[in-house]
Image: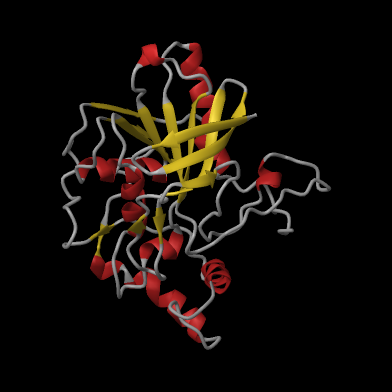
Length: 293
């Protein structure tokens, strides 16, 4: 079944899908990446277009993770690889109650920083329906930058996707760290949920340390006659694995709002902090992983 929403302020009609008690609008572009390591540009409207929002949009380039192995799927079960696109990956998925009830008025919005339908279904059962937004944003070195341009590109991507009314921003692990950063930087959010992550647990680092990330990658790519600016996305992902760069951080950029005072609450009126039980199980190496398909 198809769900349709005519959005006046965006000047577009979105066609999504209905699954049970929820409707989903997938792959909606909220920003564009004009070039590698550039700040994102907002997508403000569609000039009256009909937008097919039934399929998920492309992911941002990232290292392969064997989900099939994590879920203990049989070897013969092939998990399809999602499309990746370095410049077209800034998209989001919106999940809403399938049947709108005008008595509820405007629904609160939860923006999730790395399947949202279960959250909306549970909210309907509790007679407290919500809208959930899940976003794609740049990851790894594509978010960190090459030391020559803008910093904290993931934060900049996310900020474009947070411009909603009555917003709760929520995240888990690294997503919680990002959510906390948005709180400190006065993002337009009334509530925040930080699950297994805060800026205190993963503090921003000075720009003087960015060379520990950029230098080994540049050296690896230079050995094959390339660079962070000229290599393909696939070549950069391969180099990330070869130099074993698995963790990066938010940078303390003097040209951006200060992140050193973690007690700032910005526009947030309510804050929930907690742990995610058994989270570490998703990080464990369950023996040797299968080769990627």
